[in-house]
Length: 419
Ligand code: DGY
Image 1 (spheres, helix red, strand yellow):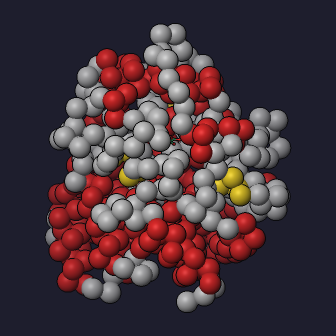
Image 2 (cartoon, protein in one colour):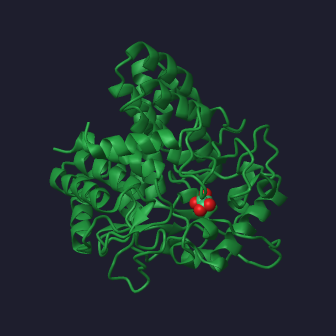
């Protein structure tokens, strides 16, 4: 153990609430979906049993329709907005009513493959497998009603990349009239200049209130939302999770789950080709309302490499990342774009979770040097700036929340991957 891993473990323990882990104290006092799945990958390095529990707790709050919500409000905490009263989803333990990137299938496979306690791993993965399979089924049924092979998000929060430049145009269609008055809490915990704007918050809230007026019937939200975007990063994660779940299911003799998820993965990978931009050397989002590609070179189009994209595409993505030429990689938006903002959340800063998934995908596609460069840069960043939520890619300045859970989890993963 070195000092870095000791610090990472200390942060994971400090944010552990027993059966779930908060992303950070103050700013995010509940359980977040993709945070938790990636957190489990960190926990496995020092407490395998606890890692399984993290994902079990999340999946215990799955909706009957199959959706796994993006936040589980385990205990009241008025330090966060919008809380359970705003969502009003009517769940026994309150949750939000939208979802988040489907990392669970990938996390399950990684936990299972690397587990030391094989018996426990098999028992626990067997119970989780059908739940994750139901989530994947829900995604394609409700978010790909025309069977295109890729799913749309209906709220920027679903992508996890809340204020990405990717959403700007589509978000303009979301009205702000009639949103109930509210007080933001995030800007009391973090520098407002590093967070989404008030105008964006009005639109986030308008969508929540609109979906609430539809009684959170998840099968209605896609067609009812003025915001429907096919994000290559979000889909890359889902397609990787489908392929991983299919492998796991094969191993466990669950042939139907295996066939279904293999089909989702293959069909989705073929459809992803329609989002490739040769000019930009990466994938782009598609606005499903207008049917057009969104001219915005964000990390979403690089993160697609987490799925089994063609090798020549992965090689181009590695070049695109090199061309960013920032001191730390990977910037969450193309630095030469005038809209790039080095400090504002997902409009430029570096995030360790996406670094991890991009590096993993590139390594699998034969881009070992590119993957190593991301791993080394990520660890350099932590050594220089500590365990923040995100970082300025040019100066390395730590931004957003501090002592951040998933950053710590990713450090443990990166340390184990360092060559
Ligand atoms: C937030 O509150 O900033 C979250 O990203 C929404 O899930």
